[in-house]
Length: 385
Length: 171
Image (cartoon, rainbow over the protein chains, first blue to last red):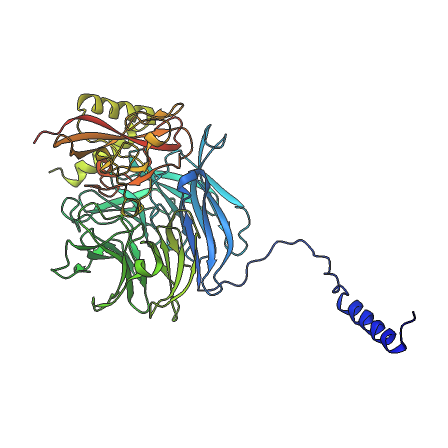
Protein backbone atom coordinates (compact mmCIF):
# COMPACT_ATOMS: atom_id res chain seq x y z
CA UNK A 1 0.00 0.00 0.00
CA UNK A 2 1.29 3.40 -0.89
CA UNK A 3 0.72 6.58 1.25
CA UNK A 4 -1.26 9.38 -0.22
CA UNK A 5 0.66 12.52 -1.16
CA UNK A 6 -1.28 14.46 1.49
CA UNK A 7 -0.22 12.21 4.37
CA UNK A 8 3.32 12.09 3.10
CA UNK A 9 3.55 15.87 3.11
CA UNK A 10 2.05 16.09 6.63
CA UNK A 11 4.50 13.53 7.95
CA UNK A 12 7.40 15.40 6.40
CA UNK A 13 6.22 18.64 8.03
CA UNK A 14 6.01 16.99 11.43
CA UNK A 15 9.49 15.56 11.06
CA UNK A 16 10.88 18.94 10.12
CA UNK A 17 9.04 20.62 13.00
CA UNK A 18 10.18 17.91 15.39
CA UNK A 19 13.75 18.23 14.29
CA UNK A 20 13.56 22.01 14.88
CA UNK A 21 12.04 21.57 18.36
CA UNK A 22 14.68 19.05 19.36
CA UNK A 23 17.60 21.16 18.18
CA UNK A 24 19.92 21.73 21.16
CA UNK A 25 20.54 25.31 22.26
CA UNK A 26 23.80 26.93 21.39
CA UNK A 27 26.57 25.66 23.68
CA UNK A 28 27.70 27.80 26.61
CA UNK A 29 30.94 29.63 25.95
CA UNK A 30 34.08 28.50 27.77
CA UNK A 31 34.53 30.21 31.13
CA UNK A 32 37.62 31.89 32.46
CA UNK A 33 38.45 31.13 36.08
CA UNK A 34 39.04 34.33 38.02
CA UNK A 35 38.89 35.72 41.55
CA UNK A 36 36.02 38.11 42.06
CA UNK A 37 37.10 41.63 43.00
CA UNK A 38 35.23 43.40 45.75
CA UNK A 39 32.67 45.89 44.48
CA UNK A 40 33.03 49.54 45.52
CA UNK A 41 32.69 50.08 49.26
CA UNK A 42 29.12 50.59 50.44
CA UNK A 43 27.92 52.11 53.71
CA UNK A 44 25.59 49.12 53.92
CA UNK A 45 28.34 46.58 54.46
CA UNK A 46 28.88 44.88 57.78
CA UNK A 47 31.68 42.71 59.18
CA UNK A 48 30.20 39.76 61.09
CA UNK A 49 32.45 38.09 63.65
CA UNK A 50 31.78 34.33 63.77
CA UNK A 51 33.75 32.82 66.64
CA UNK A 52 32.99 29.29 65.39
CA UNK A 53 32.74 28.19 68.99
CA UNK A 54 32.04 24.52 68.22
CA UNK A 55 35.40 24.33 66.39
CA UNK A 56 37.11 27.29 67.92
CA UNK A 57 40.28 27.32 65.85
CA UNK A 58 38.29 28.49 62.88
CA UNK A 59 37.00 31.98 63.72
CA UNK A 60 36.27 34.23 60.78
CA UNK A 61 34.94 37.62 59.78
CA UNK A 62 32.34 37.59 57.04
CA UNK A 63 31.79 40.74 54.98
CA UNK A 64 28.08 41.01 54.13
CA UNK A 65 26.23 43.33 51.76
CA UNK A 66 23.01 44.56 53.37
CA UNK A 67 21.53 45.80 50.10
CA UNK A 68 21.94 42.62 48.10
CA UNK A 69 21.82 40.19 51.05
CA UNK A 70 24.94 38.34 50.02
CA UNK A 71 28.32 37.43 51.39
CA UNK A 72 31.10 39.39 49.78
CA UNK A 73 34.06 37.59 51.27
CA UNK A 74 35.82 36.36 54.37
CA UNK A 75 38.80 37.15 56.59
CA UNK A 76 40.14 34.15 58.49
CA UNK A 77 40.57 34.92 62.17
CA UNK A 78 41.87 31.84 64.01
CA UNK A 79 41.29 31.13 67.69
CA UNK A 80 39.06 33.37 69.81
CA UNK A 81 40.19 36.53 68.01
CA UNK A 82 39.76 40.23 68.59
CA UNK A 83 39.32 42.54 65.64
CA UNK A 84 38.84 46.15 64.71
CA UNK A 85 38.97 48.47 61.71
CA UNK A 86 41.52 51.20 61.06
CA UNK A 87 40.21 54.78 61.46
CA UNK A 88 39.87 55.15 57.67
CA UNK A 89 38.23 51.73 57.34
CA UNK A 90 40.82 50.50 54.86
CA UNK A 91 42.39 47.82 57.07
CA UNK A 92 41.08 45.09 59.33
CA UNK A 93 43.32 44.22 62.26
CA UNK A 94 42.82 40.74 63.70
CA UNK A 95 44.60 39.67 66.88
CA UNK A 96 44.57 35.90 67.09
CA UNK A 97 46.36 32.73 68.16
CA UNK A 98 47.66 29.76 66.17
CA UNK A 99 49.35 26.55 67.20
CA UNK A 100 52.08 24.97 65.10
CA UNK A 101 50.22 21.65 64.80
CA UNK A 102 46.70 22.95 64.38
CA UNK A 103 45.07 22.49 67.77
CA UNK A 104 48.34 22.00 69.66
CA UNK A 105 52.04 22.67 69.43
CA UNK A 106 53.90 25.95 69.72
CA UNK A 107 51.59 28.88 70.38
CA UNK A 108 51.93 32.03 68.30
CA UNK A 109 49.94 35.17 69.06
CA UNK A 110 49.85 37.54 66.12
CA UNK A 111 48.12 40.58 64.66
CA UNK A 112 47.21 40.19 61.01
CA UNK A 113 46.41 43.21 58.86
CA UNK A 114 44.10 42.71 55.89
CA UNK A 115 43.48 45.20 53.09
CA UNK A 116 39.72 45.69 53.06
CA UNK A 117 39.78 46.69 49.39
CA UNK A 118 40.90 43.24 48.31
CA UNK A 119 40.50 40.83 51.27
CA UNK A 120 43.74 39.26 50.06
CA UNK A 121 45.52 37.08 52.60
CA UNK A 122 47.21 39.30 55.20
CA UNK A 123 50.28 40.96 53.74
CA UNK A 124 51.49 42.27 57.10
CA UNK A 125 51.65 40.66 60.51
CA UNK A 126 53.02 41.56 63.93
CA UNK A 127 54.02 38.68 66.19
CA UNK A 128 53.01 39.30 69.81
CA UNK A 129 54.16 37.97 73.14
CA UNK A 130 51.87 35.03 74.02
CA UNK A 131 49.79 37.21 76.32
CA UNK A 132 46.82 38.18 74.19
CA UNK A 133 43.51 38.32 76.06
CA UNK A 134 41.24 35.53 74.80
CA UNK A 135 37.69 36.44 75.71
CA UNK A 136 34.40 37.68 74.30
CA UNK A 137 34.83 40.18 71.48
CA UNK A 138 34.51 43.89 72.22
CA UNK A 139 35.69 47.05 70.51
CA UNK A 140 38.55 47.06 73.00
CA UNK A 141 40.48 43.81 72.49
CA UNK A 142 42.51 45.50 69.74
CA UNK A 143 42.18 49.15 68.75
CA UNK A 144 43.92 51.87 66.74
CA UNK A 145 44.97 55.30 67.97
CA UNK A 146 43.03 58.09 66.25
CA UNK A 147 45.89 58.74 63.82
CA UNK A 148 46.53 55.00 63.25
CA UNK A 149 50.11 55.50 64.42
CA UNK A 150 49.67 52.96 67.23
CA UNK A 151 47.80 49.70 67.60
CA UNK A 152 46.94 48.57 71.11
CA UNK A 153 46.30 44.94 72.07
CA UNK A 154 44.81 43.84 75.41
CA UNK A 155 46.86 41.25 77.30
CA UNK A 156 45.65 38.96 80.11
CA UNK A 157 48.03 36.27 81.38
CA UNK A 158 45.96 36.54 83.80
CA UNK A 159 47.87 39.67 84.86
CA UNK A 160 46.44 42.58 82.87
CA UNK A 161 48.47 44.84 80.59
CA UNK A 162 48.48 45.94 76.98
CA UNK A 163 50.86 45.94 74.06
CA UNK A 164 51.72 49.04 72.04
CA UNK A 165 52.39 48.25 68.38
CA UNK A 166 53.64 50.21 65.40
CA UNK A 167 51.51 48.94 62.50
CA UNK A 168 53.48 50.84 59.87
CA UNK A 169 56.70 49.07 60.76
CA UNK A 170 55.19 45.83 62.05
CA UNK A 171 56.82 46.02 65.46
CA UNK A 172 55.87 45.72 69.12
CA UNK A 173 57.03 48.87 70.85
CA UNK A 174 56.38 47.79 74.41
CA UNK A 175 54.04 46.65 77.14
CA UNK A 176 52.17 48.79 79.67
CA UNK A 177 51.02 47.33 82.97
CA UNK A 178 47.45 48.31 83.85
CA UNK A 179 47.27 47.41 87.53
CA UNK A 180 44.43 44.93 87.05
CA UNK A 181 42.39 47.16 84.75
CA UNK A 182 41.43 45.59 81.44
CA UNK A 183 41.02 46.26 77.71
CA UNK A 184 42.22 49.11 75.49
CA UNK A 185 39.93 52.10 74.91
CA UNK A 186 41.81 54.40 72.56
CA UNK A 187 41.37 58.15 72.56
CA UNK A 188 43.30 60.70 70.61
CA UNK A 189 46.71 59.89 69.22
CA UNK A 190 48.31 58.81 72.47
CA UNK A 191 45.83 57.99 75.26
CA UNK A 192 44.63 54.51 76.23
CA UNK A 193 42.02 53.83 78.90
CA UNK A 194 41.13 50.60 80.68
CA UNK A 195 38.17 49.56 82.85
CA UNK A 196 38.86 48.73 86.48
CA UNK A 197 37.04 46.55 88.98
CA UNK A 198 36.62 49.62 91.18
CA UNK A 199 34.44 51.21 88.48
CA UNK A 200 37.22 53.65 87.65
CA UNK A 201 38.93 54.29 84.34
CA UNK A 202 42.72 54.08 84.15
CA UNK A 203 44.16 56.35 81.48
CA UNK A 204 47.74 55.97 80.25
CA UNK A 205 49.42 58.63 78.13
CA UNK A 206 52.14 57.60 75.69
CA UNK A 207 55.21 59.28 74.28
CA UNK A 208 55.66 59.39 70.50
CA UNK A 209 57.80 56.28 70.93
CA UNK A 210 54.95 54.40 72.58
CA UNK A 211 56.31 54.50 76.10
CA UNK A 212 54.29 55.53 79.14
CA UNK A 213 54.62 59.19 80.06
CA UNK A 214 51.92 59.33 82.69
CA UNK A 215 48.75 57.81 84.07
CA UNK A 216 45.64 58.88 85.94
CA UNK A 217 42.75 57.11 87.61
CA UNK A 218 39.23 58.55 87.39
CA UNK A 219 36.52 58.57 89.99
CA UNK A 220 34.25 55.48 89.80
CA UNK A 221 31.46 55.71 87.25
CA UNK A 222 29.79 52.35 88.03
CA UNK A 223 29.58 49.88 90.89
CA UNK A 224 30.68 46.35 90.03
CA UNK A 225 28.88 44.93 93.07
CA UNK A 226 25.45 46.48 92.67
CA UNK A 227 25.16 47.23 88.95
CA UNK A 228 28.15 46.21 86.81
CA UNK A 229 28.81 47.86 83.47
CA UNK A 230 29.08 45.71 80.36
CA UNK A 231 32.52 45.99 78.79
CA UNK A 232 30.93 46.02 75.32
CA UNK A 233 31.08 49.78 74.78
CA UNK A 234 28.90 51.47 72.16
CA UNK A 235 30.72 53.90 69.87
CA UNK A 236 29.55 57.54 70.06
CA UNK A 237 30.78 60.70 68.35
CA UNK A 238 33.19 61.61 71.13
CA UNK A 239 33.56 58.42 73.09
CA UNK A 240 31.62 55.37 74.15
CA UNK A 241 28.43 54.55 76.03
CA UNK A 242 28.54 51.75 78.60
CA UNK A 243 25.31 50.05 79.66
CA UNK A 244 24.89 48.44 83.05
CA UNK A 245 23.20 45.16 83.86
CA UNK A 246 20.16 47.05 85.21
CA UNK A 247 19.90 49.37 82.21
CA UNK A 248 21.74 52.55 83.15
CA UNK A 249 23.53 54.38 80.33
CA UNK A 250 26.93 55.88 81.13
CA UNK A 251 28.24 58.07 78.33
CA UNK A 252 31.96 58.72 78.54
CA UNK A 253 33.58 61.47 76.48
CA UNK A 254 37.05 60.35 75.42
CA UNK A 255 37.80 63.32 73.15
CA UNK A 256 40.26 64.86 75.56
CA UNK A 257 43.22 63.66 77.54
CA UNK A 258 40.98 62.46 80.35
CA UNK A 259 37.56 60.79 80.22
CA UNK A 260 34.57 62.95 81.09
CA UNK A 261 31.45 61.27 82.44
CA UNK A 262 27.94 62.51 81.61
CA UNK A 263 25.13 62.12 84.10
CA UNK A 264 23.77 58.58 83.58
CA UNK A 265 20.28 57.95 82.26
CA UNK A 266 18.13 54.86 82.25
CA UNK A 267 16.73 52.56 79.57
CA UNK A 268 13.95 51.45 81.90
CA UNK A 269 11.25 53.06 84.00
CA UNK A 270 11.29 52.55 87.76
CA UNK A 271 8.56 49.92 87.30
CA UNK A 272 10.59 48.08 84.66
CA UNK A 273 13.89 48.21 86.53
CA UNK A 274 15.09 44.77 87.58
CA UNK A 275 12.53 43.10 85.33
CA UNK A 276 13.49 44.32 81.87
CA UNK A 277 17.20 44.59 81.20
CA UNK A 278 19.77 44.68 78.40
CA UNK A 279 21.63 41.50 77.58
CA UNK A 280 23.48 39.98 74.63
CA UNK A 281 26.97 39.54 73.26
CA UNK A 282 26.77 43.03 71.75
CA UNK A 283 24.53 45.11 73.96
CA UNK A 284 23.82 48.11 71.78
CA UNK A 285 24.39 50.09 68.59
CA UNK A 286 24.10 53.82 67.95
CA UNK A 287 23.20 55.60 64.71
CA UNK A 288 25.21 58.66 65.59
CA UNK A 289 23.78 61.29 63.21
CA UNK A 290 20.17 60.30 63.92
CA UNK A 291 20.73 59.68 67.65
CA UNK A 292 19.05 56.28 67.46
CA UNK A 293 20.22 53.85 70.11
CA UNK A 294 19.23 50.19 69.63
CA UNK A 295 19.40 47.83 72.62
CA UNK A 296 18.47 44.12 72.88
CA UNK A 297 16.20 43.88 75.94
CA UNK A 298 14.57 40.96 77.72
CA UNK A 299 12.57 40.17 80.84
CA UNK A 300 14.69 38.41 83.42
CA UNK A 301 16.48 38.62 86.72
CA UNK A 302 20.04 38.40 88.00
CA UNK A 303 22.21 36.13 85.86
CA UNK A 304 20.33 36.71 82.60
CA UNK A 305 22.65 39.42 81.27
CA UNK A 306 23.84 37.23 78.37
CA UNK A 307 20.47 35.70 77.56
CA UNK A 308 19.90 37.82 74.48
CA UNK A 309 17.09 40.20 73.66
CA UNK A 310 13.50 39.22 73.10
CA UNK A 311 12.95 42.75 71.81
CA UNK A 312 15.01 45.61 70.46
CA UNK A 313 14.23 48.89 72.17
CA UNK A 314 14.94 52.07 70.24
CA UNK A 315 15.85 55.27 72.06
CA UNK A 316 16.59 58.85 71.11
CA UNK A 317 20.03 59.17 72.63
CA UNK A 318 19.69 62.95 72.81
CA UNK A 319 16.32 63.15 74.57
CA UNK A 320 16.63 59.71 76.24
CA UNK A 321 13.08 58.94 75.17
CA UNK A 322 12.14 55.43 74.11
CA UNK A 323 10.86 55.57 70.54
CA UNK A 324 9.87 51.97 69.84
CA UNK A 325 9.85 48.37 71.00
CA UNK A 326 10.43 45.83 68.23
CA UNK A 327 9.46 42.27 69.28
CA UNK A 328 12.05 40.58 67.13
CA UNK A 329 12.28 37.24 68.93
CA UNK A 330 8.68 36.63 67.96
CA UNK A 331 9.40 37.63 64.37
CA UNK A 332 12.72 35.81 63.97
CA UNK A 333 12.13 32.80 66.20
CA UNK A 334 15.28 33.33 68.24
CA UNK A 335 16.71 35.83 70.69
CA UNK A 336 18.86 38.77 69.60
CA UNK A 337 22.54 38.12 70.25
CA UNK A 338 24.27 40.88 68.30
CA UNK A 339 23.27 44.05 66.50
CA UNK A 340 24.88 46.86 64.53
CA UNK A 341 23.60 49.83 62.55
CA UNK A 342 24.97 51.64 59.50
CA UNK A 343 25.85 55.33 59.71
CA UNK A 344 24.27 56.62 56.47
CA UNK A 345 21.02 58.63 56.32
CA UNK A 346 18.99 55.52 55.36
CA UNK A 347 20.41 53.18 57.97
CA UNK A 348 20.14 49.43 58.04
CA UNK A 349 20.00 47.58 61.33
CA UNK A 350 21.75 44.20 61.25
CA UNK A 351 20.51 41.71 63.83
CA UNK A 352 22.08 38.29 64.47
CA UNK A 353 20.27 35.71 66.55
CA UNK A 354 21.23 32.94 68.92
CA UNK A 355 20.34 30.52 66.12
CA UNK A 356 22.90 32.16 63.87
CA UNK A 357 20.45 33.84 61.52
CA UNK A 358 21.23 37.32 60.17
CA UNK A 359 18.38 39.77 59.63
CA UNK A 360 18.49 43.08 57.77
CA UNK A 361 16.00 45.66 59.02
CA UNK A 362 15.08 49.18 58.03
CA UNK A 363 16.81 51.13 60.79
CA UNK A 364 14.04 53.70 61.01
CA UNK A 365 10.87 51.61 60.80
CA UNK A 366 12.12 48.25 62.05
CA UNK A 367 10.66 46.50 59.03
CA UNK A 368 12.45 43.22 58.36
CA UNK A 369 13.81 43.36 54.83
CA UNK A 370 15.57 40.01 54.68
CA UNK A 371 16.66 37.05 56.82
CA UNK A 372 19.59 34.79 55.95
CA UNK A 373 19.11 31.55 57.85
CA UNK A 374 22.14 29.86 59.42
CA UNK A 375 24.41 32.69 58.41
CA UNK A 376 27.00 31.98 61.09
CA UNK A 377 27.70 29.45 63.81
CA UNK A 378 28.27 31.94 66.68
CA UNK A 379 27.91 35.55 65.48
CA UNK A 380 29.13 37.34 68.59
CA UNK A 381 29.88 40.81 67.22
CA UNK A 382 29.29 42.98 64.17
CA UNK A 383 30.99 46.14 62.98
CA UNK A 384 30.08 48.60 60.24
CA UNK A 385 32.81 50.73 58.62
CA UNK B 1 43.03 53.15 101.00
CA UNK B 2 46.25 53.25 99.10
CA UNK B 3 47.26 56.41 97.37
CA UNK B 4 47.57 56.47 93.59
CA UNK B 5 51.33 56.63 93.93
CA UNK B 6 51.29 53.51 96.00
CA UNK B 7 48.97 51.84 93.53
CA UNK B 8 51.16 52.68 90.56
CA UNK B 9 54.29 51.74 92.43
CA UNK B 10 52.69 48.40 93.13
CA UNK B 11 51.79 48.10 89.46
CA UNK B 12 55.34 48.72 88.37
CA UNK B 13 56.64 46.21 90.81
CA UNK B 14 54.09 43.66 89.76
CA UNK B 15 55.07 44.21 86.13
CA UNK B 16 58.70 43.73 87.06
CA UNK B 17 57.78 40.53 88.82
CA UNK B 18 56.04 39.23 85.75
CA UNK B 19 59.28 38.19 84.18
CA UNK B 20 57.73 34.88 83.30
CA UNK B 21 54.26 33.43 83.27
CA UNK B 22 55.54 30.49 85.28
CA UNK B 23 56.57 32.72 88.17
CA UNK B 24 53.18 34.40 88.20
CA UNK B 25 51.42 31.07 88.15
CA UNK B 26 53.58 29.87 90.99
CA UNK B 27 52.34 32.85 92.97
CA UNK B 28 48.74 32.19 92.05
CA UNK B 29 49.13 28.52 92.77
CA UNK B 30 50.36 29.39 96.21
CA UNK B 31 47.35 31.57 96.78
CA UNK B 32 45.03 28.81 95.67
CA UNK B 33 46.71 26.25 97.84
CA UNK B 34 46.57 28.48 100.86
CA UNK B 35 42.99 29.59 100.43
CA UNK B 36 41.14 26.97 98.53
CA UNK B 37 37.78 28.71 98.68
CA UNK B 38 38.99 32.16 97.70
CA UNK B 39 38.14 33.02 94.12
CA UNK B 40 41.00 33.44 91.76
CA UNK B 41 40.41 33.46 88.14
CA UNK B 42 37.77 32.60 85.65
CA UNK B 43 37.60 30.47 82.59
CA UNK B 44 36.77 30.99 79.03
CA UNK B 45 34.32 31.48 76.35
CA UNK B 46 31.70 33.65 75.04
CA UNK B 47 28.38 34.45 76.43
CA UNK B 48 25.60 33.34 74.28
CA UNK B 49 22.01 32.96 75.17
CA UNK B 50 22.23 29.22 75.29
CA UNK B 51 20.64 28.73 78.67
CA UNK B 52 17.64 30.75 77.69
CA UNK B 53 16.85 28.64 74.67
CA UNK B 54 17.85 25.09 75.56
CA UNK B 55 16.19 24.17 78.81
CA UNK B 56 16.68 20.55 79.74
CA UNK B 57 14.06 18.65 81.68
CA UNK B 58 16.45 16.18 83.27
CA UNK B 59 19.19 17.87 85.28
CA UNK B 60 21.91 15.28 84.96
CA UNK B 61 25.62 16.05 84.72
CA UNK B 62 25.19 16.11 80.96
CA UNK B 63 22.48 18.75 81.22
CA UNK B 64 23.03 22.50 81.33
CA UNK B 65 20.41 22.66 84.09
CA UNK B 66 22.49 20.50 86.44
CA UNK B 67 22.81 22.38 89.72
CA UNK B 68 26.62 22.59 89.73
CA UNK B 69 26.66 24.53 86.47
CA UNK B 70 25.02 27.73 87.73
CA UNK B 71 27.72 30.00 86.26
CA UNK B 72 29.49 27.76 83.77
CA UNK B 73 30.18 28.85 80.21
CA UNK B 74 31.38 26.43 77.58
CA UNK B 75 31.07 22.78 76.64
CA UNK B 76 30.27 20.32 79.42
CA UNK B 77 33.16 17.89 79.86
CA UNK B 78 30.60 15.28 80.96
CA UNK B 79 29.52 15.20 77.29
CA UNK B 80 33.08 15.08 75.98
CA UNK B 81 34.56 12.00 77.63
CA UNK B 82 35.00 13.41 81.13
CA UNK B 83 32.57 14.01 83.98
CA UNK B 84 31.27 17.08 85.76
CA UNK B 85 34.52 17.11 87.76
CA UNK B 86 37.09 15.44 85.50
CA UNK B 87 38.68 16.28 82.18
CA UNK B 88 38.32 14.05 79.10
CA UNK B 89 41.23 11.72 78.32
CA UNK B 90 44.25 13.46 76.90
CA UNK B 91 43.30 16.96 78.01
CA UNK B 92 44.83 18.93 80.84
CA UNK B 93 43.04 20.84 83.61
CA UNK B 94 43.63 24.57 83.85
CA UNK B 95 45.66 25.46 86.95
CA UNK B 96 43.72 28.67 87.43
CA UNK B 97 40.02 28.93 87.91
CA UNK B 98 37.08 31.03 88.91
CA UNK B 99 34.82 30.13 91.76
CA UNK B 100 31.08 30.34 92.30
CA UNK B 101 28.37 29.28 94.68
CA UNK B 102 25.58 26.98 93.50
CA UNK B 103 22.54 25.66 95.32
CA UNK B 104 21.95 21.89 95.36
CA UNK B 105 18.20 21.33 95.54
CA UNK B 106 18.71 17.68 96.50
CA UNK B 107 20.10 18.51 99.95
CA UNK B 108 19.22 22.18 100.22
CA UNK B 109 22.85 23.25 100.65
CA UNK B 110 24.90 25.89 98.89
CA UNK B 111 28.24 24.65 97.62
CA UNK B 112 31.35 26.51 96.59
CA UNK B 113 32.43 25.18 93.23
CA UNK B 114 35.50 25.73 91.12
CA UNK B 115 35.01 26.12 87.38
CA UNK B 116 38.02 24.80 85.53
CA UNK B 117 38.70 24.48 81.85
CA UNK B 118 40.13 21.36 80.24
CA UNK B 119 42.74 22.27 77.70
CA UNK B 120 44.96 21.17 74.84
CA UNK B 121 42.45 20.14 72.19
CA UNK B 122 40.03 22.16 70.13
CA UNK B 123 36.55 22.87 71.49
CA UNK B 124 34.51 19.73 72.14
CA UNK B 125 31.37 21.06 70.50
CA UNK B 126 28.90 18.99 72.55
CA UNK B 127 26.54 20.27 75.25
CA UNK B 128 27.20 24.00 75.10
CA UNK B 129 26.08 25.62 78.32
CA UNK B 130 26.10 29.24 79.38
CA UNK B 131 24.70 30.19 82.79
CA UNK B 132 25.59 33.34 84.63
CA UNK B 133 24.39 33.45 88.24
CA UNK B 134 26.41 36.21 89.95
CA UNK B 135 28.74 36.34 86.96
CA UNK B 136 30.58 39.66 86.43
CA UNK B 137 32.48 41.25 83.53
CA UNK B 138 36.17 40.62 82.97
CA UNK B 139 37.36 43.53 85.13
CA UNK B 140 36.39 41.19 87.99
CA UNK B 141 38.12 38.04 86.76
CA UNK B 142 37.33 35.97 89.86
CA UNK B 143 33.68 36.09 88.82
CA UNK B 144 33.99 36.14 85.04
CA UNK B 145 33.32 33.23 82.71
CA UNK B 146 34.20 34.91 79.39
CA UNK B 147 37.96 34.58 79.62
CA UNK B 148 39.77 31.53 78.31
CA UNK B 149 41.28 30.06 81.44
CA UNK B 150 43.40 27.64 79.50
CA UNK B 151 45.47 30.75 78.79
CA UNK B 152 48.16 29.75 81.29
CA UNK B 153 48.43 26.11 80.21
CA UNK B 154 51.34 24.96 78.11
CA UNK B 155 48.68 23.83 75.65
CA UNK B 156 46.30 26.74 75.95
CA UNK B 157 43.58 25.62 73.55
CA UNK B 158 40.11 25.37 75.13
CA UNK B 159 38.26 22.04 75.06
CA UNK B 160 35.52 21.94 77.75
CA UNK B 161 34.60 22.99 81.30
CA UNK B 162 33.98 21.27 84.63
CA UNK B 163 32.50 22.29 87.98
CA UNK B 164 34.29 20.84 91.01
CA UNK B 165 32.82 20.92 94.53
CA UNK B 166 35.23 22.59 96.97
CA UNK B 167 32.97 22.49 100.00
CA UNK B 168 29.77 23.65 101.60
CA UNK B 169 29.35 27.41 101.62
CA UNK B 170 29.19 28.80 105.14
CA UNK B 171 26.01 30.71 105.80
